[in-house]
Image (cartoon, rainbow, N blue to C red; front, top):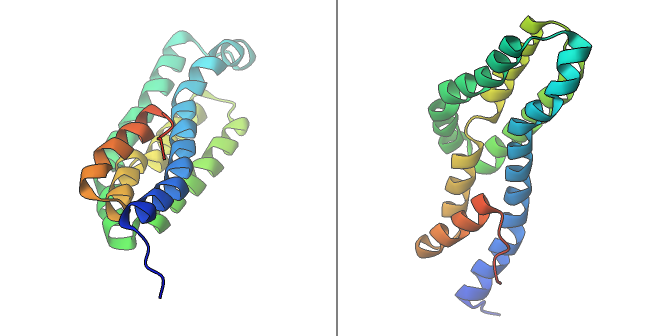
Length: 153
């Protein structure tokens, strides 16, 4: 029977898990800031005022805040892989649905729902890493994940 060195095992796990989580974090960040990029066209095309835009951009974080802890409780019960997949699928569908926004109320609802959908992703990803990677290495992998650095393998 072939034995695998512990360092090789954790290296292999890191190479498989971290890139996917880092890509998810990139899209998470992009999702948060894309409303800022869309503001110029959105304001002129849909006639949104700065107040409508500001409230819509901020309400995202209200949804995120409200579901952060419950999302992580569910993640612990359901399992990290399934729950993170659910987060990413729901959030992707809602992101695609933003193309149908025409009124300020639709904008508010969509941004709030996006916050609800994305809640728990980052802490869930760190929890997921902690289940697969040695305790002393989780901090280093977490920093690489959040800062999007390439981890030396």
